[in-house]
Length: 398
Image 1: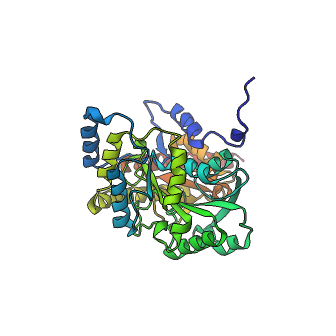
Image 2 (image 1 turned 135 degrees about the vertical axis):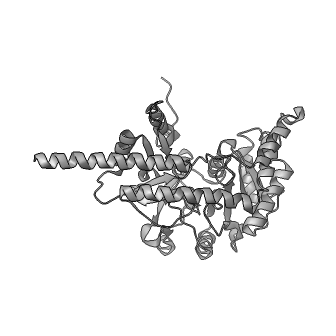
């Protein structure tokens, strides 16, 4: 009998891979499931982006293998984007590496820098892929808490007191998913200083910086970050291009070369048409983002009404989601979410999937039309009303 590799023993199938199959099974023509679970933008990229893809794809010469480092125009567009958005200067030839989505970059970075037994600092709550990749490369997971008492900030003083001598990589993610926490420049500087002091690589995963965030920032703009930091970024969320799989990693030349050693053995370059489209997308102006964020603001108002009806509490936050604490009387949040799903056909993400610190929380996505969010609100209201009536009837009988 063929045995699987030991490296996958502690890795489970991604939660959404399993759960969305279950959710789809509830779909009927009479009552469609409303998916408020995932952050997959439902709007289109800019028309200029789509036009660039079509024009490039029509050229017969554009369908062959491409350079592993991406075309110069794409890398220059990323550099221009960093200069305009983050006031950060990058060398497009040596400090930028396009990726097929930033998610693949998490694996590439881990393979390039983490040896078996090295410790990796993982945010709790945080994106589950950080932990999965650490397990796949045989690293030791060191969860660090983002504390509600600090408005989901990192207690850097507490982290400093711990033994960091075996840490190789620290994953940070600001603006943070799932909590929507935006880090200040002072916080990022403290993290960079910590990485420099203890000589580990700090990687900021930064795909949400343009969504409902007035002060987008790159960790690479912080003094000293060039010595110890990499940054992942993506067109998935900010430019409505999740399925296009377009992202990049940025940082100093030696770090980029290390990641390229892994990447160049994993794929054979990115379709040229996608690179031409990405180059155009990165030229989207302020007006485009202003319109995009206005849509999300309107949706967020309805999402907050939904959370109010559920009795949840929440703070101000950025990004594509609203992170909220379940009411105290809910004993099991995962079970509660399933009751809502099966009672209303509205799917909301339970916070436990982001780590133990998220067990009392839920996450609502804004990647759904305002009309559908309103429909979800009405379904939940009706469901709770029926529950209350049933509970009152049972009490009356007693």
